[in-house]
Length: 470
Image (cartoon, rainbow, N blue to C red):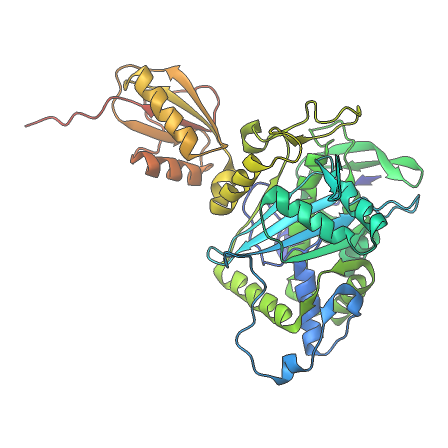
């Protein structure tokens, strides 16, 4: 199947297409519904509930007449113990027709910061090995946690997965939601499809189809996807092209679809179309599981959506793969002895100290870690040992970033220079580094005529500037 839809400039201008992953996006908190969807769906559906619709208690809605009759203070979503964040676990479950699979192959923790209005999404890959059963010291893929615990005690699967996600990310999770493949396709179709900017062309010759396989192909560029097409784009992981054949690439594509779905759901076309809204409600009711939420939660979510639109908050996306944290956190080497592909903490199975620290840094400064530039440091006159010492200090201050001391470049320059080798890119990182180093020189000096070693950001340390006396 080849999926490629050409659109006119007029059509492209009519509906915004998300930018590439790793770039900041305009969000809408709980704009994230499970798996490959957004909690904005829950908020949208909840808004209608608030106005009179009913949804089965199976999805977790708790209603009490007192919630309406008794005046209350401004409603708020549940927060973590710091009072600064609301965290949501979003799960997509494998429900293929062949067999009784219950693998949760999409696992995303979304965190909303009430102070900065930022949302970050952290994907945990399916091959990440964890302790699957709290009562047994046995490690397996995280995508089996739900099934293992459901089989042991029905209804305990999502709670067990939440506990594991909390342990990995050190984030206290207040809400969780899970959707199956059918629900995902129905949600996408209910809004008339989503416009997705496919970053890389790729072909997957082994996309699962019942007991066999089929070929799916995607061409780079913006295109309209219906539910089935978006599901294939989000699930594919066997391509041999453009580094798209991995679980990590798949996780990034899933977050790409999330951004597209969010924008579509929050558009006036969707919210003001009764048929689309009712179709969304049907998909929500029949195909997802959500932790308990109340009318207060619904109204709080609506208030946050309004604030997001007014203040233009940002969304940042991350995947916990072997490249995370300058390749110092997660490994695929000697994780298990089964012969199957696996990843786990470099510290050892079940040890998450460094990953916890990394996640805290993502929350603290998501834009810096989203840009994630390569930073090379050169001695330009300050002295080899002196420059090396400062490079060590920078590595400690900006942990888990790609900071390298290269050595001598010049021996007669003055001042400190911090600059990007790519115009209009990595501006936030340049500003953060120059502020820390207390230098105003943030453009490439004229005496540097190349991109040096091809790094994103270069830092040159020259001699202290001598001020002539007149």
